[in-house]
Length: 190
Image 1 (cartoon, rainbow, N blue to C red):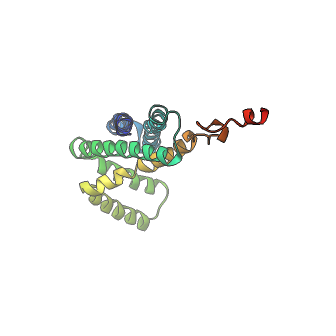
Image 2: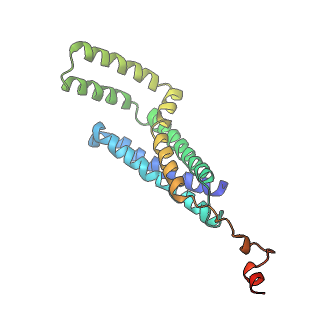
Image 3: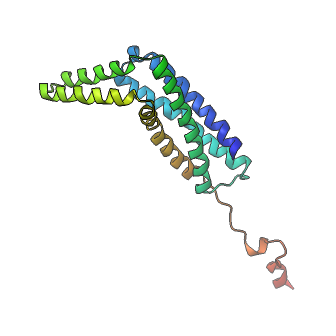
């Protein structure tokens, strides 16, 4: 299981990292509103490797069979590896290459509040909330926790669906097919 989980987890992580980095550096051109759609679509694309990883495990290790529990275990481990890759990459990108990302996002949220016709009190509340968010997000541990919570629910959902689709139990052998069991058809014909 280790080999399958590592291979598919690292490939999924590499895809999610590549797409996340590309999105992060082009967020000004894409915009935060479309960036969320593009971001979650890229996460979903990366988590397709969960399905293929479970299927690969079923075919190579399970001889074509896998229980829901085993499929879920394989899938969630692939998801965790992919999420860890995503978090590590974001920590590096955010703290080393995008020092003003937090301010841009904060300004985007506040401008949306203004554009929606929010009152001055509501905008002031939004400004204060965004300042607190920015302060928290600049803490690497909190940043890592928020970042982990971006892809993980998607990976969990893909894992559950994939495990349900790919589960395949061995058929219970009929007594006449068991080795050493008397062939009842021959007994009745005697």
